[in-house]
View (cartoon, rainbow, N blue to C red):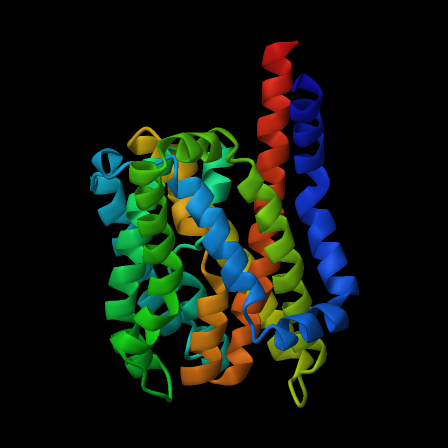
Length: 307
C-alpha cells in the first residue's frame, strides 16, 4: 500500500501536464472518438468522478457561509465590470473575458480541491449554489452583452444532470450500500485518474477547435488568450484571499479560479460572437497549469514534513 501511495504522489506531479500534451498531440483521434460516442465520454467521466467525491460528503456537512456569498458577488459584479472596461477597446475580447469570469465553478473543482486539502463539503455546497445562481444570472448578463438570447432552462439543462444526479446517486449509495460507499470514499484518488482521462478529451477537442478556426485575426486570438491568462491568475489569487479570511484558502481559490469551461465555450459559441470562445478555450489550459503547480507544491510540502 505504501508503494502505491508513493507512486500516486509521484504521478500526480506530472500527470496533468502530460495529459494536456497527449490530448493536444492526439487531438484528431480524440475528437473523432468523442464524436463517435455522441459527446458522452466527458459527461460520463465527470459524473463518475463527482460520484466518487460526493461519497465523502453528507448533507449535514453542507452549510452556506459568507465565503460563498462573496465569491458569487465577485463573479457577477466582476464579469460585468470586465466587459464594460474592455468593450471600448474590443467587443470580442470583452465578451471572451466576461464569460471567463461569469462561468460557474467547474464540476471537477471539488475533486481537485479535495486533493489539495480543501473542505470538500464547503466546495460541494458552493458548486451546487454557484451553478444554480449563474443559470439565473447568465441569461440577463448575456442579453446585455451578447447578440443572442439564452434562458435559465437552457443553461440549467446543461449543468443540472452532471451536478445533481451524481450527488443524489452518492447519497443513495451511502444510505443503501454503506460499505461500498465507505470503500469508494476511502479510495477517492480514483477520481483523479478519471479527471486525467477527461482532461485528455477536453484538451483534444480544444486543440482541434483552435486548429479549425478560420478568418480570425491573430491579434484578436492573442488578446483573447492573454485576457484568459490574466483573469485565471487573478481569480485564483482573489479566491484564495477570500478563502483565507474564512479559514480555507484552497476552497476559495478553486471555487473562483477553476471554471466550467465546457459550459463557458458553449455559451460563447451559442449566444456571443463565436470567436470570443477562444478565451474560455485558452482558460482550460491556464487553469490546469495552475492546478498542476498547486499539486506539485502540496506534494513537495508533504515530503518536507515527512522528511
